[in-house]
Image (cartoon, rainbow, N blue to C red):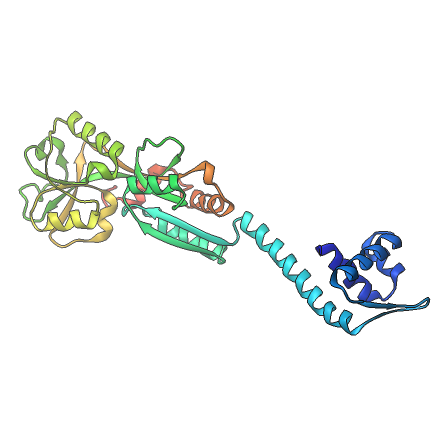
Amino acid sequence: MELRHLRYFVALAEELHFGRAARRLHISQPPLSQQIAALEEEIGVPLLRRTSRSVELTEAGRRFLGEARETLAQAENAVALARRAAQGEIGRLQVGFVPICGVIPVAVRRYMLRYPDVRVTLRGQGSTEQLDSILRGTLDVGFVHCPISAPGLECRTVESFALVAALPTRHRLSSQRTIAWRALAGEPFIGFPRASAPVAYEALLTRLREAGLDPNIVHETDSLLARLRMVGAGLGVALVPAYAVKFHRPGVVLRPLSPPRAVAQVGMVHCPAHLTGAIARFMAVVGEVVERPLAAVDRAASPFAG
């Protein structure tokens, strides 16, 4: 039994006339008669009483009509759902992010308002874990520390923040308005693990060495908040994105570095091989949110901009 058999039967049951039903279906009358006969043969009971002057539904036909209409409606609904899913209007979206990603709240809120039938799940993860999950298809979009090196993935920088020095409030340098890079020589550093973002880690080490520093890293953590807590406890100093000012950790002061030679960048990553309508629409929304030049984002995020 095919859906066209049901469409032919419903049209005939509503018109109760082979000629009118055929015109409604845009077919000739003989094929319609043949298809209805084939349907009755497959079901094994007559659905219609035919006379030279009229067509009537049998009791079986009346029962079958209701189910046929419901089946056709369900089929149409299934097609509509499939099209909406392909267009990214329904479904689910899994998004990973690193803590400093400030674009996430605005972008997700705007996306959910625009596409309320897409279920969005957020996961706070390290950059390396996100890249692996995106390649496996268990994560749709990631926001990671840049730069990255991951064949098969595409990355677009969406945020950039100046790096600043996080110091304990009683630190010898805390009274200075800006901190020279060389002034941090010999200080115990609190950093992030190389494994969480290997390329970004090496890029930061290169910047530090260019500034004449060979950092003494005594503690490492993926969590920006944990780094700030360690600084507040007097366990060392840290280089953090200016975005950290939003966390207002007690016992910590943030000071701009002079010269401001290093930045922390966040990139939006996806796998083109796994691209769906929902992913494409989400990335478009993120693009709207970060339309401003990165320099403007830096100024808006940094409490040290003049």
